[in-house]
Amino acid sequence: MASVGRELLDVPLPEMVMKLGLGIAEAQRALDENSVATAKILADTTIPLVLAMTQTIAADGTVSYTQSDPIDVSLMQIGLLPTFYQFSEATIEVTMDIKTTMSTETNIKVSSSAKVGFGCWSASVNVDVSHNRKFGKEVHGTSKLITKMVPVPPPARIAPELIIVDNRPKPTA
Amino acid sequence: MNDIYDRFGATVTFSEGQEGLFIVVSQEKDPSANIHAHGGSVVFRLDKGRSVIARLTLTNALALQKEKGILMVSGVHLDVQRYNAVLASLGASLVPPQQ
Image (tube, rainbow over the protein chains, first blue to last red):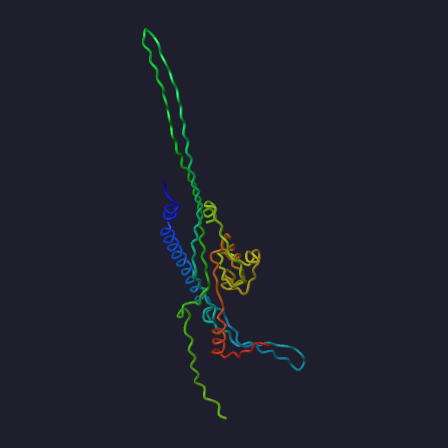
C-alpha cells in the first residue's frame, strides 16, 4: 500500500513548475510584443503641437487670437510611452487531503456430517475460513497558481534620446 | 479563454487598480461609445478618431478588448519629465505647478 509520503512524492511538482515557467515566458513574450506594437503606433502617430497662443484685446474691446505655427511631433517624442509589464512573482500551492482506511473481515463456517450403514460409519467436519482485508484510499488535491504582474519602466533605448544644443549667446550682465 | 478555466473549475481574478491611460485602436469607427460604455473617458483623439487615448481601469480595458471591432487596447503612460523637456526644447515656457 502506498504511504502518505509516497503520495506526496507523486505530486508532479517539477512538471507543474516547468509548465508554469513556460506559461509565464509565453505570456511575457505576448505582453512584450503588444508593448512593441503600441510603441510603433505611438512613434508613427503625429499630432500638431501648438506652442503658443496670443490673445489680443483691441481698444474697442474685441478679442482676437493668434497662434504659432503648429509643429508635428510624434506621440513618443512628447513622452507618451507604452507600458511594459513584467511577471514579478509566481507561486504554486498544492494542497492534498489523503485518507486511508483498512478493514478486516473474517468468516468462519463450520459444518459436520456423519454417515452410518452396513457396519461402517463415517463422519466429517468441514471448516471454511475466509479472511478478507480491504484497503481504501481517498486522495483529494487542489492546486493554486498565483502570478503577480507589475508595470516596469520601458527599455532605456525605446524612446529617441533628446539632445538639446543651445547655441544662443549667453546674456551679458 | 473563459471556457478553459471554467472547465477546470478555476477562477481568474484581477485586482482592481486605479485608472490608467490606454491607447484604443478601432477597426473602423470611433471607439468612444465603447469606451464610455465601459466606464472610461476619452483623453484625446488620434488618427481621425479611429484611435484614441482613453482613461480606463484595467478590468474595463480588458473587457473593452473583447468588444467587436476593437483591434487593440494597450497601456500607455506619459513621461512628464520627457514631455517638459520636449516643450522646453521647442521654446515653450513652462508654467510651474500651482501650490
